Image (cartoon, rainbow, N blue to C red; front, side, top):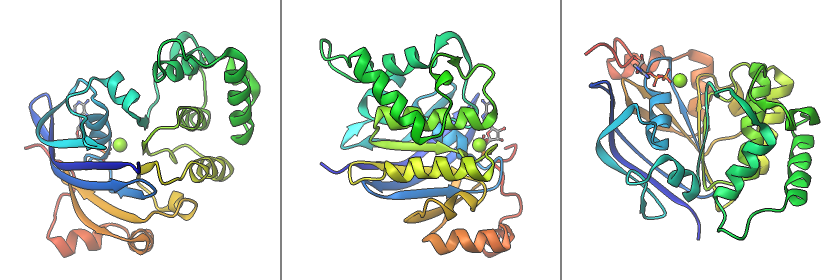
Length: 259
Ligand code: ADP
Ligand code: MG
């Protein structure tokens, strides 16, 4: 079955302050949706709310993955259901190696008794690391500890490749990447494009979208999607910035603001 991911009227608050003010978005398997927007407009909040971060309270709306109620699920259940988030600022976890972490994550998605064998896992991980041009030593390093910004981002893509999620959310995967790393990361994403998998790519700049061509582009301001279009919208934003969108819609302050 092809993936269907649907967000309807999603509102979310942090410490009583409403950040997301009603998000509607439908992503089908095979589609890449880009969310673009200036800083402070609620993009990362959307990613966190979708993954079930405890700090982000959902006050209204619904989220379903293949008809299943995502908001009812805990964080681990969401991961098992096939949701994946590559974070803007991945956490460092001392004492847990990258290989241990990834193998546990893969096995958590499998039935008991059907765990991946160590040999098969190592072979897969080595293969994907090679594709991402990662040094094999990263297998045994503690998760993200002392990784550079670019190494962390590659490692997030490595996780995505091994976990084979149904709905991939990438939050500013391009930040901190030089042009070569950007190309490698984009190739990793493109290799994962398939009918069974949808993508939500959050980015501030259109640069990444030169390498990953989106089917739809959405602009976020004030905790809402204020404009949607095709890839040409990203090109116009690249050329002209965000001011014309604000003018067109009569928006003065695009951030979520204090209220
Ligand atoms: P973006 O990713 O578009 O830059 P964010 O979703 O990170 O925007 O932030 C939107 C607004 O929510 C900002 O005003 C930010 O300060 C606020 N916010 C986000 N996360 C938190 C948090 N954990 N605690 C308090 N405020 C937050
Ligand atoms: Mg952000």
